[in-house]
Image (cartoon, rainbow, N blue to C red):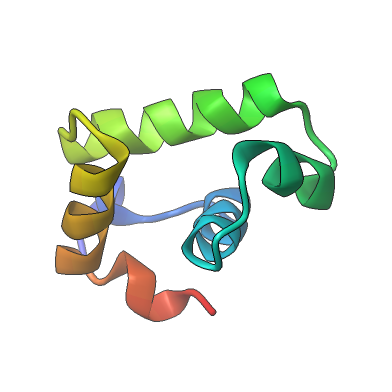
Length: 71
């Protein structure tokens, strides 16, 4: 696994919530952060993955095995 492939604990928690169907708003409440922070985190993950959409990010995250660690 490359260094840039590692997720922080907070990113892992966020992916777990989003994979479970939580909205940005409900994920923010669960994580104790603002919706803006959640969206910034998602944007950062998408940037690291080179994804232009959340769907594409999900596919790329699954390809990297990131979603195997959630849930």
